[in-house]
Every structure is written in structure tokens, then in C-alpha cells.
Image (cartoon, rainbow over all chains, first blue to last red; front, side):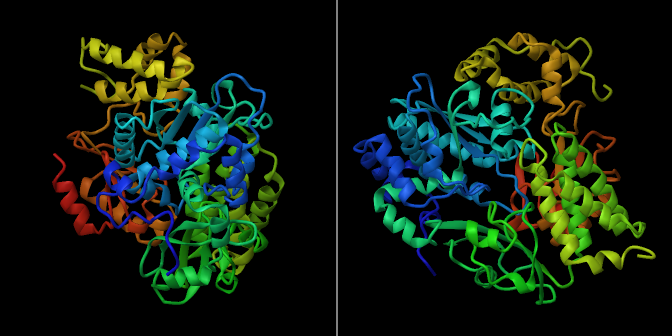
Length: 407
Length: 166
């Protein structure tokens, strides 16, 4: 198996402690970053081709460089640890097993963007990861790593998927309901509490210390032309060994399923969700695709948060869509009409189809509503819902039709 | 004591130490309001749930309108507006858990507890909820019991779990 970068410390049962992290070479990247100019750190991350691993895949170094150069007030670094994309569980592992890697990544990122205050927004349900991470923050303060020019506030969410959307997260961090904000202005210009803010995912920041110690070229070389590094794939569903697997982003979906022990159930693959619930579904014939941002985009889906959910032939695709449609109906924040209304109605329609009461025009109505609404809302939530609505129905239409009387 | 009510005469107020913690939390954010979610967590831990009276009280600590607190409390799933059972069992019904048989686990829990999802047993012991992805799909089907994740559930494992909840 290829080299592990992000999960390098996981096999040590004490990996969450400062002593273990230091013994494994931890915080030497921070020492090195202290010798570097902030702009040089950003440049290194750009050259490494690091792309955001939370979902959108935006180039991290470019994002950092959007902080206005002439800004004199505070700049905030916000860590998005509001992991909630269906089928994703990697950040939970990082928070629990290598919290100091994240703190070191935060320190380096904060130096690059000249921030003296960081917030980490951890989803409310993650009580254990929150305790682990908070303990690591305390260790880092006691050791003088934090509190000398950079402070970290650990913030707990309260249950809302939309707070994983970066501007919804900022609203929530400000003590409001988690309604996303219209962009522009982007957070780098006007973010948390009205100040320039960089929001980065947990895993993204954990990539930063290895980039600083081992160099941008090495990191870039692990991946594809347009995305460097390895990433953590959360593999679940009908596979023999559901788990988180670290692999270079050039791995194919077929190889990843093999890595997870292959398909269970009937043993015959029917479909795979490659990048969390909001990714378009791929059929068994579409899995020779590389699991990087651009590879999945070219395949008409997205890598998103790299949550891979595998379905064997016995899985009902209409039922799977009903489960996801229920999720989107429940989690729509209600701000934009197309999303608030469509997610509710589409769930009802898919539900009645599964119950055998579908109407002849239901499938076309869902497709029509989904396509019209895409791109009309403040945030990407509804576009994320549209991915599954359209792809499940278009790729498995006969399975839906078989459930509709007189279709 | 009926659901949604605090004990008669019980004052809705934090202790001095807790008020100190509220001020500490408020001081962590550039705008004190950033501490609203953490303080609501504290309030729920202290008063059992977030009633309208608790909303009023928390609003007074932030000098904001109770309506602002209400819209926050009602937006998030982890704030209880009525008193939940002594234990909260939240079973995931999202896709990975669905693929691993969550539906059967949920039906089993309903039968064992004699309630529907969203309800609390008559003795106030357990509130049963179905929830969206808790991000432990490698161990599906799974649930959250109070602040713990319970993984790789089977009907038998769920029975043992329920027996342990007093």
C-alpha cells in the first residue's frame, strides 16, 4: 500500500497526546514555518496543489492569498469540523487520533494569513472528538505552542447539516441560526464577525505540516497534475471492510472498492456514491475513474468529501433516493424558496413512488423541478440535492418506473 | 411534572460560577453573541431543556431579544424544547445505516420501547429519535445514546443497551 501521510500516527494508541505527536516528529513543521515569511508558506501550499478536502475542492493556497494585503484589523482562521456529509467520517478520526496535527496545521495556516485567532467549529454530536480536541488544545497552551500570538477557541455546534456550508457555519459561529450568506463578499474579504476569514476543513489543514516539512514537490508528486497529496476515503455500505482508507488521489474507484475488501451482499456491484450523499451516483460501469477533484468532475459526479457508499445489486435505488431526499428535506435551512419547497415536495414524491402510489408524471416532474432550481439558491446545498435526484432517476429510471402503477 | 414545564417554583438562573463561565465564553468571541450556542448547551445541561422561560433568561444574559434566541433554539436539532427522557437514543437512518439495516433496528427499538420515533417512554426513561448521518458509517448501523456513539448495532446489542439505561 502507498505511503500514509494523514493517518501516519493512527496505529499508536496514544497518538492524540502531545508527547506521542512530538515523538513522531510533530511540531517540527511549525518550527520550520516560523523561519518562513507568511507569503512563502502560502506559495509552498499553492505549489503543493493542495485542494480543499471538505467538499468544494478549492485550491487552498489560492484561498489563503485572497486575504486583503492592506487589511489592518483582525483576520480569523476557522476550522470546519462540522462533518456531516452522508457517508463521511474521516474528520472524526483526525480529531480523535491526531488532534495535534490539526493544531500544528492551524498554527502554520494562521501564520500564512496573519491571523491571531482561530475558531474550530465541531459538530454538536461529536462529543468524544470535541473532548479529545479540547484536551489537545489545553496541552498545546500548557506547552506554549498556543497563546503566543495565536489563540484557539473550540466551538460546539448544535445539530444542523447546513452549518458545514462555510457561510452557514460563520452565521452559526456568530450565534445565529445557520443561514448561509450571499457571496460575494467571500469570507476572505468579509467573514466571521465581519472580518477577513479563511475557512478550511480539518483534513485540509492536517496536510499542511507534512507539506512544510517534506516540501511542495513531494506532496504534489503524490497526486495528479491538478491535485496533490493523498486523502482519506470513507468507505461504507456493501463492502467487506468498511473503514477510512488513505490513498493517493490518483487511485481509481475500482481500486478503492478492492481495498475495502470488495462488494458484499450479492457480491455484484450495482452503484456507488463516490463523494458523499450529494455526489451524483455512478453505475458499476463507471468506476474506472480517478478519485481526485477533476477525475470525478469529468465523470459527471464529484469527489466532495470522499465519502464512498457502495451498493450491491440487491439495493433498491428508489429507496436509497428516498433516504437521501428525506435528508435534504430535513436539512434545508428554509432560506431560499426553490430549495425549501423542492426538497420537501421531492421527498414526498419519491416516498409515494416507493410506497407504490407514484403517479405517471412524477419522475419527469422531479427532474424538471430539480433542473430548474439548480443554481438559483444562495448556497450549494440545493445543487448538492439535485445531484442525486437527477442521477438516481436518469441512471436507474426503469427501477423507479417498475414501482409506478401504469407508468 | 408535565413535559415542557420546569418544577413549580424552580428558579431559572445560573449559579454565580456558571455566570462567570458565561462571561468567560462571551469574552472569547469578538461579539459576545458568538457564545450563544455554547451558553444554550450549558442552559440545557442545567435546566434539562430549553423552555420559553429559559430562552427569556438566556436572552437577558446577552441583552438580545428572546425572539432571536427562539429562532436559534428552533433551528438546531440538539436543543430540546420539551423535557426529553433521562436518556436520548438517536438512531441514524441515513444512507450507509440504511444499507446496513437501520430500518430493522429502528423498528426493533420502537417495539421494545413501545413508542414511535420522537416520543418518550411513559416512565420518562428513554426518548427515541431517528437522526441524519452521524458520520460513523464504517460501523453502521449505529446510534447515539446520550453523548456516546454505539456502533455496529444488532437487535441483541440494542436490547443490552436498553437494559443498561435506567
